[in-house]
Image (cartoon, rainbow, N blue to C red; front, side, top):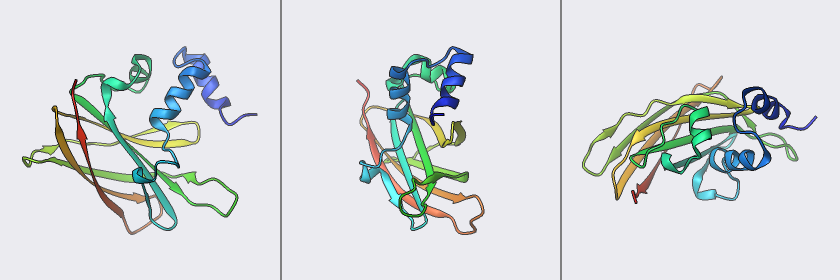
Amino acid sequence: MSKFSGYQFFAKSTGVLTGWKKLAILLLLFMPTLSSAENAYDFGDYVVYYNAFSADSLPPQMASAYGIVRSKYKAVLNISVQKKQTIGRLPEPVNANVEVVAINLVGQVKDLSSRRVVEGKAIYYISEFRISNDELVRFKVSLRPKGEAKPLTFDFQQKFYID
């Protein structure tokens, strides 16, 4: 049984995101990549991957399946928390309490509430928020993996452009 069999069952039973091509798009947009070190923070036992992008870059079927509004004036923040395993084993996704504060350069606070999305064994925390052209947004992320007392925190910033 392949690790995608749960996804394939979901896709076939719902008629959403069928085919390997759409699966590849899903993985590229929602799955954090190991090769993108600037989009990851290593906290010892945990690695946190993040990605912020314009919501209009999502294919319509994917946006609909995840309840995301496609708009060039909206962006999506995707966070994944993974617990490191022993050598030779892949990290495992974990549940976490995720809090994000986003502020632009003029001090406007963006309303970000994260929602948990599960796709097979993968766990993501997705937030949507409004953006303007040439807007720099600073994110302050605090998350606490299930069973941990101390939160993991990090900051990053990203500039968004509207065509």
